[in-house]
Length: 257
Image (cartoon, rainbow, N blue to C red; front, side):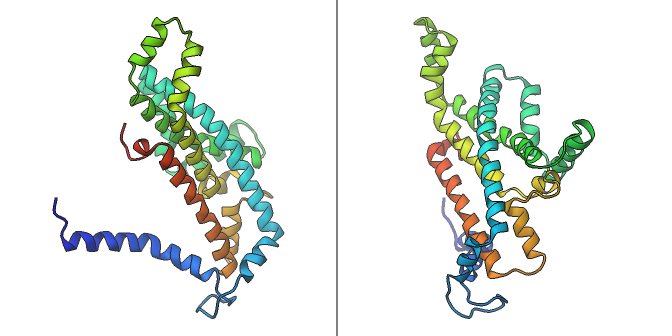
């Protein structure tokens, strides 16, 4: 199909809208000016300040711990959910697993807040954040694993059963190795979503617990300093997780099976 100049212009405009602000954030993280209103000169000072900011380091540690625990848990549960959705094809199961994915984040955050306080009588903190992150991450892992299973020839499993393999042996030696790229991709996706999440974390964090997105939000309420740009630049490294996920399961993330 022929691509005219208007199509190229529209595409460039969209990409510029998406990536030029990110480029500005990165460039101004090296700006030698606290006001950050205009470019003054190049400096590494703000990264040095960032590495000596105890509150920021504590928030980063909380985010990494929550992301690690929630992504591992969501990967295990999402893998099982994806396999169940593929095998049984139950609409109710698919609805339950995928609803948190389709639900607006603010609605999910408020729902979880009310559930933790009114039903579980749970004190908001690290535990509530991890449960919330696991809840919305399971669906993403399940979708990727389910799509991976849909691209596998079912005759392979039938051949294993004909050869006398037990269900566990079939899963261990055939199913799991085949879906492993999808499992890894789902885990990386869950980690990325967890470490970058703000809205749901905002409602479920409680008092005294800060993650990196919450810490950045508290800083920009005063002013957008180069230190904010520096930590935002480091957060952009989470994009590598999406790149790695696309390498492990390229067809799945492109919507192909």
